Amino acid sequence: MYYEIIPNKFAPKRKDREDSMTTNSHSICYGKCNCNCVFCDFTKRPESAYNTYDDELFSEAVDILLEKGNNFKFTGGEPTLNPHLERHLEIVKAKGGYVYLDSNGSNPEILEKLMQKNLIDVLGISLKGIDKEEALKIANIKNGNLIWDNVWRTLEIANKYSDKVRTIVTLVFTQENREGRLKRFAELICPYPKAYMKINNLQRDDHPEHLNIHSIGIDSLYNEIKEFVDQNSEWKNRVIFVPGASGVSNYDSIIFF
Image (cartoon, rainbow, N blue to C red):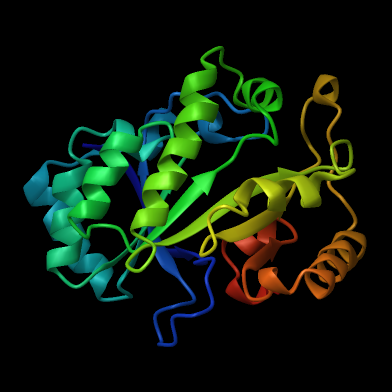
């Protein structure tokens, strides 16, 4: 299968796993996506970054990665487009790996099957907006069912497996879309009482000028989140703040509320 594999770099976005393996994870990055998000650098990755792995080669790669840690982050692109995803998750789990799967939630039936088979430990869902119109604009596609309706179906399914699967829902914040966003985000996730809200400050400010999007001052956004959690105790220990690009790989820069 067509992967870019990056060893022991990415910081898991959860705090409640108390062992020595929590601060880094290996990225298994699938080379296709069904979105074209305006702030994503996926399409900028060179073709040379990817290699083809059959089951045997993938199993050998997992053995090597396990020498450095047992966290595996399956991402992309969109990993549920990978026809070999189930088999490769089985390989990782059989060898004692711990699976983080990042998805845009567009394929709920596939994700449900993987959860039924206990192949996902942490499910990360990327929410593209606080309403369907924004989600379509950010994802840069025309299929609203794919990037909005299916996401909520995925979250409903994940809620059924919440005793076994930890769900983290991510939303990007920018200076331009900030007003009322945190409250609306919480309202959307409220029906899923075990899900985390993950707030990503826009990671870079080098986007094309026509997008007109900018990151928020870290202290300002931190204070807004802290005030929200202080006033809404049901969200205590359920909010994750990634203040900038360093939070991708540096666990210590992630803030948990």
